[in-house]
Image (cartoon, rainbow, N blue to C red; front, side, top):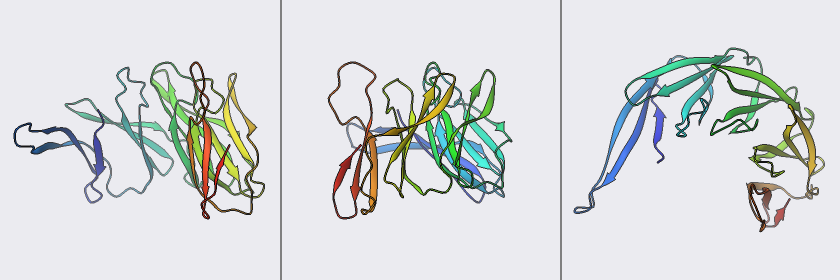
Amino acid sequence: KEDVAGRWQETGEWWMLSDATTNATTGTYAAKNVLIGQWNPSATWQKVVAGNFTGDALGKDTIAGLEGSNWWLLEWDGASSSNTLMTNAWSAETTWVNFLVGNFTGAAGLEQQIAARSLATGAWHLLGKSGASFTNSFMAAWNPVALWLNVVAGDFDGDGTVDIAGRNTSTGAWTVLAKDGSGFANSDFGGAWPTSSVWAKAFAGIYTEQAGSPKKFGILGQSVGGTWQKA
């Protein structure tokens, strides 16, 4: 089941709304708030994401937050919480964009990683579990001069791992960043979309009938004028 978690900015406390039930007789909805941890309320948290970053076999999610150059991981085991420094190697001087969560490496089980792109250099970086610790690694780079929009995640090559796709607004072309052997590589995806249109939305999903599994994702986009396009 899915729970809802939120951070109280003044105190740094993390609270979870969980165990929601409905009384079959009265129809009354009941839930409880649980204090699951606390972060420094004076810190500036640039990004907060949730995912199975520890590779928990049951799929239990954790919460990760970027503060300065540090990624912190909040875990709750049902009775107590812990904060773990995942890495201190993400430059605090860098503007990070396009934060995405998924299994980009093809790791076994339900493990997920965090990916984000440096706006200045175009470099994609990946933070993921490596044994008992976490490792920060370079994936590949996109043209830092180009404006990349509609950045989405999905399995665009059908190999069972999560890939990253983005549209170059100057050319309309889509680029996919995907696992390639022991590393990552960029490739073109689909045809270019008209640069004369403003594409307000883009969605990654399975939009064609396919036999077998895993299935390849595609991209649907809608322009401001209402036109739909598929890649």
